[in-house]
Length: 135
Image (cartoon, rainbow, N blue to C red; front, side):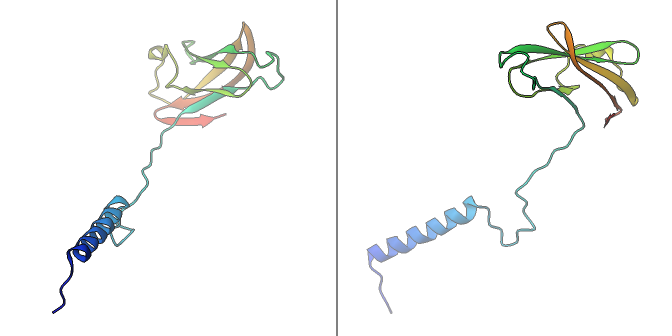
């Protein structure tokens, strides 16, 4: 029968602990199909954005107001600060006043972006009943 020294026993114990730690830390299950490392999320939003590509503000900060108008004339607004890159807002999450708008059915909406009293962009989209479509 072979006898192990205390040093050898401690070394083996450390190696076993290290292997167990690595196995649990990286989540090895023996079958990668049983455990997925990714979660997913999806949701419909409308992303509206503008960019001062022409440099009208010369890289200086400016405030952009996005206004979405429902077919009944009710409005919701969102504001964003831009400088020399794209700025975006997400409809409906970033908008105030949307309690005035009924989203129960798919409807056409119009939007504008205003910077210092000047309309710099506009468009339209469909939204409602958890459905989004860019027009």
